[in-house]
Image (cartoon, rainbow, N blue to C red; front, side, top):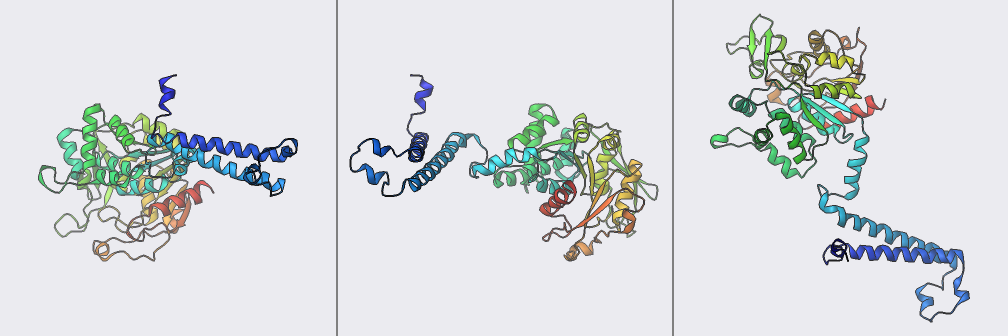
Length: 429
């Protein structure tokens, strides 16, 4: 006999018992069908113990239904356990119900093709909620980050900043919480002080694969990411800001000055941002935008996370050419040094100033102001972003006012509320 066939009969595989149960269920169903077709006990004799075993003291119709129900139940249970035994070792997250795994694979793959642009905490918050509605997600991430661990790795190893990519990977990950926590772990001592494990992992992967894009793709595969994560451009760039007073600030981390320039003066307003050297759009990002059914911009830092994506050469043209529904998610709170006293219309005006015109069909605005800002935020000058009628005046845009604030961190969006608002009120409207 074929050794591969013999292997199935090896003890400990947890397969044979369910096959036997499956066969038993089929026999019982056959018995029930036999009762429906004819009363075969009238055409032969059986030992006395057969009558009680086959429940002949019950009417024939009830016996057929009972045997049919028992047989179907046994077959269903046997198939379920047999599937677990055979497929269990090959499925990620084996501690989860098999039905959940099948749901995530089948249902989410039928979801809309969604592209999300941004960076930082805002983008990862959006992705964390959207992954429950669709598996066809593409996150287009800014590469202008030059602060903290990302900035140090970028300067020392000349790679694209991994920090925002790490946050997106963990937001879209479909693995055990411990693995996600590990990826976000930040060292606090020694030469690795300030570095996160995820950043170092991506950097190591980039050295092994020889390509940052490939490194992000492989890192996503390790953490079973739902969707894909791509940089807006493949070029090493520096974010520049032209201020209202004529000065130019160099580097993403140097642009926001919440408390002014350090001499007690009021923070200077940002006039525009641009990238040096001027980069071109990543072809993979362009293809995702043109094939998308919905494009979501924001939430996130307006001048240091959102606009660095939009000012990439070719990005505006791709967004305008895409037939997708375009949504702007406005921040729930202002950001000192970037959007002080900004209303919703001011956010849109800043984007239009960089892109030439309005590209959005919808703007999502928080309507719940019942959660007070924490005292530390108020002291820092953070305020609620106010919705004003100028948002929709002379613009072909629909405002969706909905509760999207996070009750635990009232300066941020709640992932589930935000995703539900987008998918229920915009996509299915």
